[in-house]
Amino acid sequence: MDLPIGVIDSGVGGLTVVKEMLSQLPYERIVYLGDDARCPYGPRPVEEVRTFTMEMATALSKIGIKMLVIACNTATAVALEDIREQFSFPVIGVIVPGARAAVNASATGKIAVLGTEGTIKSGAYNDAIHSLSPAATVYPLACPAFVPIVESGQYQSEQANEVVSETLKSMIGKDFDAAILGCTHYPLLQHHIEKHLPANVSIISSAVETVRDVERTLAARNIARISERKVLPVFFSTGNVEQFRSIVMDWLSIPEPEVKTIQL
Image (cartoon, rainbow, N blue to C red; front, side, top):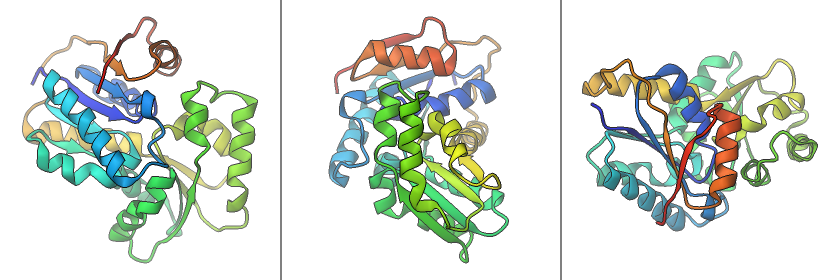
């Protein structure tokens, strides 16, 4: 019960899931691994992403975790089942929760999916949405410029706004009332994204629904931490630790986060 929940991502994007965990599951211990050195995963070959994801999961399993959240949509799309087969602890992905939240939010069944090249090519969101709502119409859009601008820490800049504006031009004229942020990096750009989509569109982050799945799994497995003492997350990065730390401080409002270098 006292072991941490592991969270892995291609970089800092999974911090959006951690933010929800800190809100909804404040007494759980969290250990996070961001593979910043090899980010982004979206343009990479499927087998490479699968290998990298397995390396991250293995690293956290050696530290000792009771559950793993694959907070990267690209990694979830190509590696979720392999990771589940390899390890005995429960493994949660972000695609099915995101699809479920969008289907519930959409009145028309017309849903846009903004994702990395790898996630969009996989068709994972199409499959997940249609398994829940067979008549749904899905408008997928790869947004390859989004992750690099978040990883560089420029997600609040005017440059980020321009990148979002240019990327979303192709969605003009399409009829949808829900848009999935199909990469956990994208909520850091949400304030820009909202400006360039119609006001009636519900913006869906998979983070909230994913953490609900985590909470349900903790209860079902009887592995929720029994404590009312909060413990700050521990972070590992394969890349620039100082840049990672600055994003943690900004996004999670943790004044002195513990960020360590890790080799995979």
